[in-house]
Length: 340
Image (cartoon, rainbow, N blue to C red; front, side, top):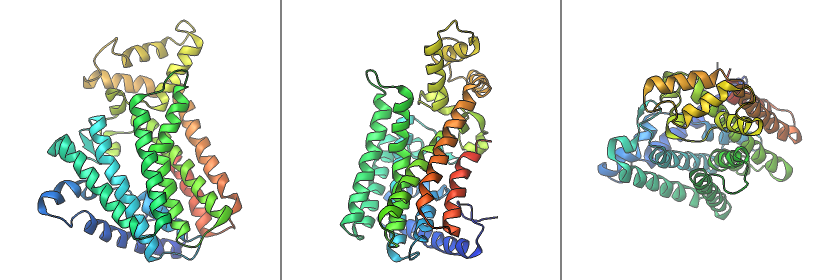
């Protein structure tokens, strides 16, 4: 079984990624602990809590489509993961999350101001890392950072006017998650000499995998245990964070009317809107989670995630057959198989 975050059945490929990830982990530790004791504790908090390191692993994997792992690939992978970690500090403040990866969130330990500044510090260190890779890398970082911010801003403001909330949510996921996974694949392939249609395909693949990954997380927020999630199931429901199952249910009820025979769907929405109990109460939240998990709309959400995964795999058609291409296909499958 692979010891990396990606499914690998080629021993040589696995060895490359294991070695590369170990070096990236060493560099990450240095990057989050190079100022002072006062700064180091909050800035290293989430790194110490662990993580899949999916983004740097994908950068390493994409590099194998070209000339392989290099100093530039390693540094780019570090920059991507620092950016991801920084975004988590800010997300937890905005979502009022009490835990992250099974540990108390930074803002829960030090307060909002310290958590926000720790995130800013990691964004700065990510930029310093990428700056050494040249203007193209800096542009990719800047564009990705912009999309992260716009995605978070759109999620916070919500859909406006006649905007379809479901399509709006897809745009948020593309900005907040798809952009950084696409950047990971982009960096890996770019610094390994991949160009043209192949490079564009890898970037498009990363974007779609990112959306599929987050759609699957929307499902898992309702169907997984607290031990797996590292937080209470239904936390997004309690905090009012939009997720695809809820948006699909709202669209279904709005289209058919409250008297169209889906009494359970109507009752679930009433509970979510606070008409039949306080979601801050664990028993009330658990009941809503169980009822929504059993509703047919969940399968619709699962199929949407699967379709984005299939679209990601289709982007790879232009690439020649290889163990790397196979691993990228399997990874796209894996992000949605988690929902089973």
